[in-house]
Structures are given as C-alpha cells and as structure tokens.
Length: 104
Image (tube, rainbow, N blue to C red; front, top):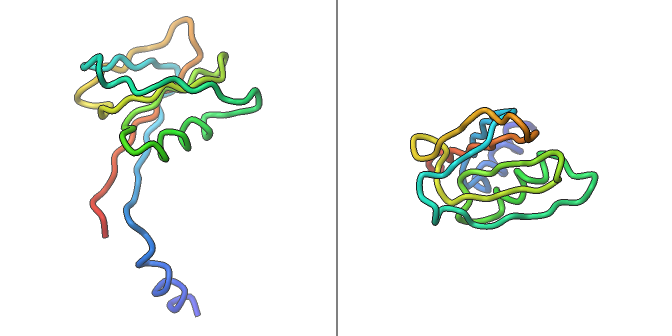
C-alpha cells in the first residue's frame, strides 16, 4: 500500500527546498538591486508566513523576518557567498536562506 502511494506521489515532486534559519541576524545583500520587496504580515504571523511568501515568490532566494514589526523583506540573491549575515543587535530578526536541489 505504501509503495503504491509513494509511486503515485513521487512524480508530483518538482524539487526539494532546503532552508536554513539564522536567528538574531540581519542580511545585507552584496548587490543593492537584489532587494525585491517588503511585506507587512498579519499581527499573528510567524516566521513561517515569511518563509511561505519567499517560497511562492519566483525570484526569492533569501528572506528576513522582523518579529517585532511582523514584516518580511525578500531578496533575489543567495545568502552565501553573496550577501553578508550579521548579528542583529537592536532588531529581533531572522534570516531565512534557501538552497534548492536539482529537480527529480
């Protein structure tokens, strides 16, 4: 039964997305044109909301979630080695780094 489910569902998987979250950090892109947009999230939003926004944005490679402001900044460049991840002193922020594997 499980083999049948796996056999039926495996062709639907396009890629595996690997995410690494750097807590209490801020991201500075190497290229100033890498900034895509800021998103204001709902008051009860969490870091998962920011992750979802970036995941569904076709050019998004890095996101920064600001916990106090409930906002999310999206960037079109990969976290490393391009941008700089620094410790966040005054902001409660987390950097979400994406790395997509090759398609199946």
